[in-house]
Image 1 (cartoon, rainbow, N blue to C red):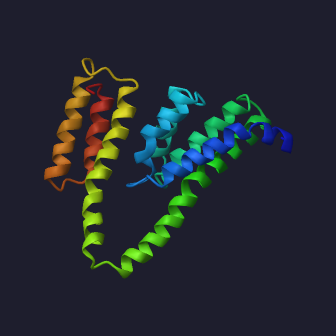
Image 2: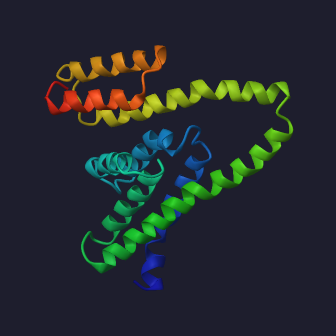
Length: 199
């Protein structure tokens, strides 16, 4: 990979960086809340990723230990791999560049903003507008997480056929909302029902 090749692919990397940087500033509740717009941009608008690559990136990162933002690295990896032709050392180099672009785009703006805003909010934590802002963010985070769940579930789901899955989702949501049952128990129950083929 030489500088000319990197320059020729700049129409890919610069828009990818800018899009992830903009989403970084909207990632209230974590990077996963921006997954619907990442899907719209990467799969629908630019066609840089397939539906399967997008869903696999999120599923793999959520199953792996580590920070929630790992799915961004996998999205960048797949974009770079596709740009490099998909096979061989050159494609892997492009994939690593994709990881770098996606992660820096996602982490840099939000880190700078969080650092500055947190320092300011801590100094002014007793002000009414700061308390109101904190209280108002909870419904936004919940709505963004619901949108992410909708995008991921609607890709391969037919509500008429998957009624048991939707019923389980509603029941678990109610249990989480109204009780203090540990989430790991609910995940274990869901895994057990999946292994039995009931959902």
